[in-house]
Image 1 (cartoon, one colour):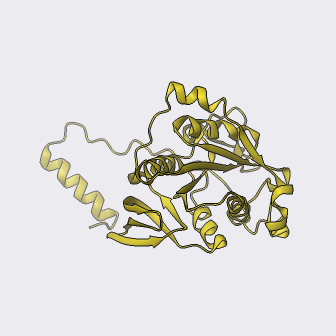
Image 2: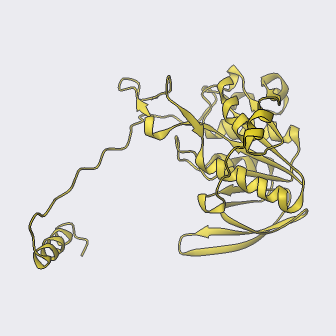
Length: 263
């Protein structure tokens, strides 16, 4: 089975800063990590390989420095890595990104594609499903367990709002992973050494241009416009009731809930 995992290198959210003038992320000097849901996807792919055999290929679209994330994936146990990178791809939104990644994945071949549910720097949860649509393959989002795996099908458990779905899906297919799907393994010392001896293969514009919507890539070809970006507000300390008895504390809490029309 050939398993392809899409990953994204994202800023460590603890360190994210916003340019107050432009409203864009300040990435210079900010540490980067593999997007957490994508790391879950790597582990799920490795476990799937251990169950049914095959290879795990990891692919990322980004600038040259994204090879650090790819080497971490190799150190975890992935077999090969590809970086999709070109100046023409810069500024792509989710629609443009999914088109570029779909074109790249098509050149690699695949049985199962795994992506993270969403990236912590955008939170759109759009790229994975869009890749599935552009490759015209069946997909299941919010996968929390792979219950059965075979060359021609998977049976997965999909998280739902008030329950879950058990779905049988034929391969080739695409899954989007949530945190509950797997706990990512650590890199090994030998894995790190091997990762830096392996080649990160670069796929550029020239290799993909014949399979792209050329007017729908990069910043100019992206239909999404971002008007403002901002960090989460820091929560206040709240109201502290000092020296209140249990009855007084309960009365104060009920009064506040009634004030907020919660009860």
